[in-house]
Image (cartoon, rainbow, N blue to C red; front, side):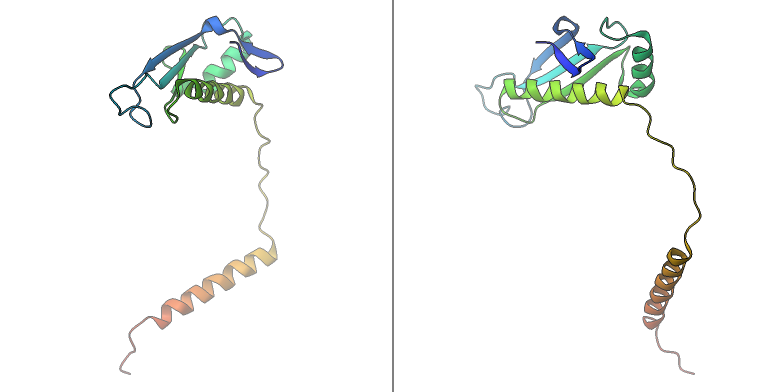
Length: 140
């Protein structure tokens, strides 16, 4: 089953690699367990689904998560292997979409307003007064 990231990008099923193993969580402790833990891998560097610009953006943004150009997500939250497959697909889709999202608008630095400055200083004075009241009384 192909993984649709956006209307413009779909990862073909042959590019996705699945691995299954016993889960340490739900469904993994019983003797007759199935291999419910799912690992889904996708080779970003060798993918034909991405353009060169998209590939470069993915490698730059997902760099720490990539191991030799391959991104891997795991899912073992549910007892069912099928449900964990769906979760792994959703996780991978979110990661890839996040890697392709445009940069957020940069924050323009502004001066604090006069009112916010007053409120900040008033809060500091209240806090200082509270702490002064905790002191041991002097013998003067």
